[in-house]
Amino acid sequence: MGDLDPAAKVKRAIHLAVWHRPGARLRHLMRAA
Image 1 (cartoon, rainbow, N blue to C red):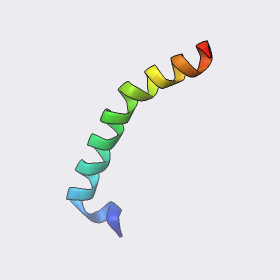
Image 2: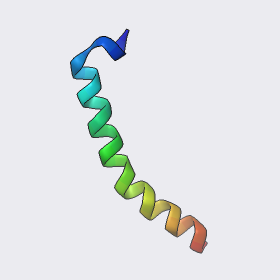
Image 3: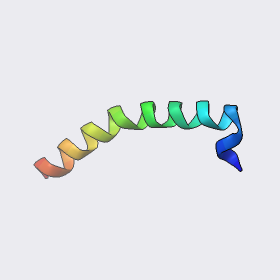
Image 4: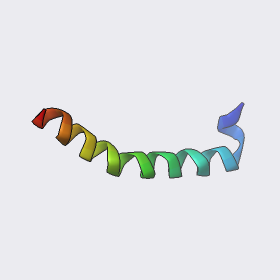
């Protein structure tokens, strides 16, 4: 359903882009801890 929605695709792309940066930092912190 949502996959057919172009807006949902853009939202998902932004969500992934936003989460990839902090996610990498969080992983680094978790590994250090």
